[in-house]
Length: 112
Length: 113
Image 1 (spheres, rainbow over the protein chains, first blue to last red):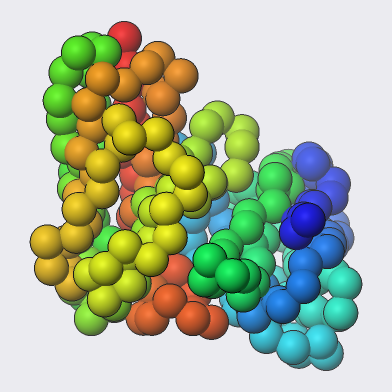
Image 2: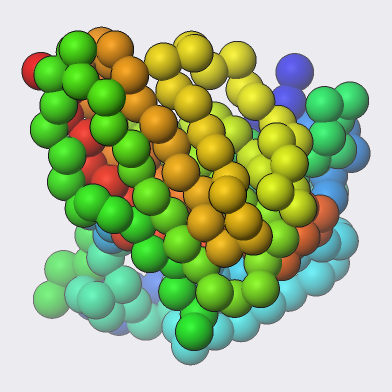
């Protein structure tokens, strides 16, 4: 069964304290892995797409990496405005077509 | 225009009401999606439309009825809902259904009394 697991569930960081969020997946036929940021009561905001192991993408203080079993979202010197829930999602090819599965998310709080 | 819009933002309805949620995008995307998200949970895929045809229907109860009138619009018709259907309903779109990031709307917060 396809699964996407994110850890930790919640993370509190001091402003400037770098850390990483993890997204591990057990799927067959991975077509893409996506990172989103979601603020309370709003729709997810797209951050990155990764397609193959070894790929890296960067945007401001965020850097996403992908291996064959997991992806990391590195946050360098975070600021309070980085506080949000970070979701990863995988796209897989199944008999019913392209399926999308979201992980349960990591709730990040950055303290000034 | 790089936005997905959803109306209404909030909806309160009784179990016998009929209502509709609307979603619109003008990015030329040919795939559109409906998700349901409960509090502190990830979005759950409900329906996928590709080129205005229903592509994926995730065993959603028939009280939810999607409609895609054209490539820019996606509706979700609601009838005889239950209180447990209260959630944030998200619409998303992507260029095509394969290997593409999805862009989400702000959602409709639905409360069923």
